[in-house]
Length: 175
Image (cartoon, rainbow, N blue to C red):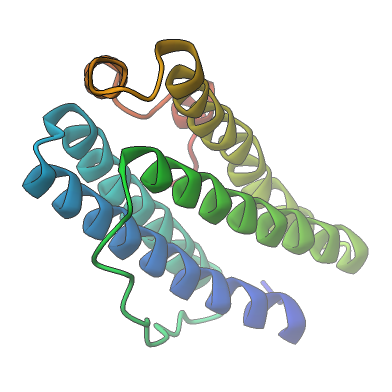
C-alpha cells in the first residue's frame, strides 16, 4: 500500500504524541500516588498504558502497510502539579490536542483517497470522543462535590471506581 508523505509524517508525529501522552499520564499517576490520591493514581496508570497501546497500534499499522514506522524522541513531561483538579485539567487539554491531531490526519487521509488509513483513523477519532468525555466527567465531579478536602477525597474515590478504558471504540479496535 502507498501512503502520502504528509500522512506518514503526521502518523510518525502521532507516535511521538502518544508516547508523550503515555509519559504524561505516568507522571500524573506518580504525582497522585505520592500525594495520596490512590484512586486517581490507579486510573492514570491505566491511561498511561492505554496511550502506549495507541502508539503501538500506529507503529504496527505503518509496518503492516509497508510504510515503516519511525519512533521519534519524546520530551519529558512535568513532574509536579498544583492539585488534583489541575491534573485532570491538564489531561483534558492533552486529550483535546490529540483529538485535533487525529481529526487533521483523518481529513488528510480522506483528501488523499487513502480509504484504508481513513478507516484506521476512524477508530481513534471515536476513541477521542470517549477520552474527552471522560475527562470532562471527572472535572464535573470537582464542581459537584466541592473543592474542600472531603470533596477532593470523594472525587478521587469516584475516579478510582471508573471502569478500565475500553468502551465501544475498544471493542472495534484495529490490530
